[in-house]
Length: 100
Image (tube, rainbow, N blue to C red; front, side, top):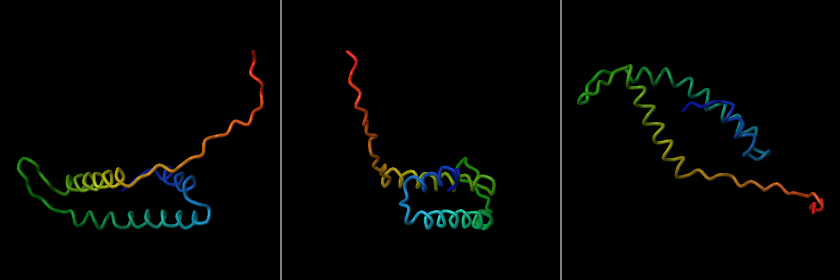
């Protein structure tokens, strides 16, 4: 759906176990390439022109509506399924005596 690549790569490096990190990174690159390849094909399918009430739907506005719907579905899915990974609290190992 489009995102900063640095954020996705950082998520992979922080939250994916070392054993499958290369596989997750390869899947991310493959999905990015697939998205770039399918974009022009999808644009060809969205060549239409009609009116719905006072809304004009044409080749200039339909991609925006499609992406708005895709992002809405993604937001709902993320809201339902995402769980924050557990992080360990930093331990304070200092043995300093309190100043009185």
